[in-house]
Length: 102
Length: 394
Image (tube, rainbow over all chains, first blue to last red; front, side):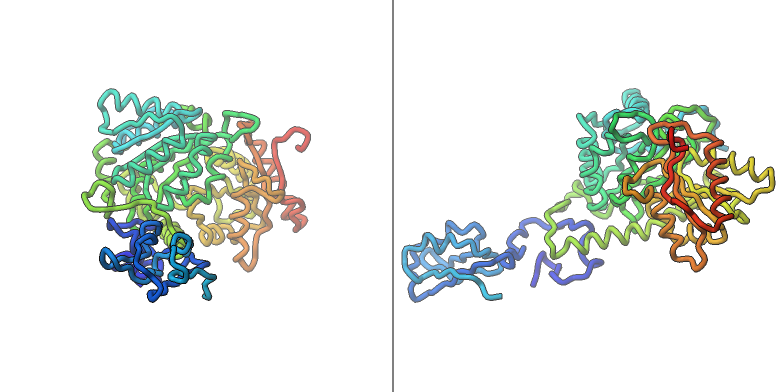
């Protein structure tokens, strides 16, 4: 998995930057926060009406939107499993939310 | 060669700073280090240096400003004592953890409470595990020399760590001694330029000190630990190079009449001079005694000290700082650890001495050498955690 361009998660101590300095901008999107998850949402596309209520409330930009009327599956690299999308979803079963099996 | 000058320890430090001409000095005055800031701000006002002097509102801010300046690629310096160092504490770890070289003159003073402005080592000894290199100075000459060498040591690419240069508050900071300065151009040539590979003003994106997750934090601590290990060789190399320029040689520690010594006192800073006089008096009577004065306390010269003390029968380690751990001061703990690796170890005792400016006399050291005789004679240390100069104790 790429953390910051050219830097891998499992790199040894002598290959990462001194003192954790970051030498690029705009890389927050590359930071994996998905590994914090306890609960996990599941996207059931057949029940989704693509109403677009879920993606603006996602604090982690973990709901990719392909076009104005089509959301895609969660980006689990970023999703922390907070469940806000599950709460706002008005269509039963389009988003389920349960404890993640790890 | 050299310039003979009559200077106090504080003025010697300020003079070294002037000759180094740092880019930034951010400092807040505190006794007994105030004079260094006083002298240096005068140099700034008189245009004798090009330094940006930042008059901050506290030592926490002083160290924060130094961290920013060093991250921005500036050669950076500051000064403090006692509670001032304590107020810097949080940032000391940031400076070393972010691998930002800078120099800090610590004019050693007791930490409160009760409040006391006189000398002991409780301030810098408390910061011994903050990732800073620590150099200790017996006299004004050493305070001056160490400060110049500290620039090169901390900024070396294998090290990149901040350096504390310690000397005894009032005892050397305010005592005037004849010392030999290097010419300005020699200091300038010796310290060269600070050229970090990356810094905040080099025109490319850089974040210094971002949140470090469990995924990387441990590796960064390992980097810092490796830098401290690497520092030992760099200190020796820089000291050798300095000897060529100054004629004054420095090692990790100084040995005084140690070759055949059976009883040895290990000591730090100005009291080494007093211990040497005691050793001379006993040597005159044919007694085999010696002194080991630690110059580099961080990194701790563990194998070298063991080697230097391996033939001693009994060693007394002097701590001008109590650890309140019910077993001994910081220098004692480290020296005794060093000796553990030896197959045949000298018997080792600890003396806490001179706290809060309590006078330290030649007689004190004669008493300690005498106590070591008893240890050698009986083959037993007895109580190892001892205090000397406390009323009602001895």
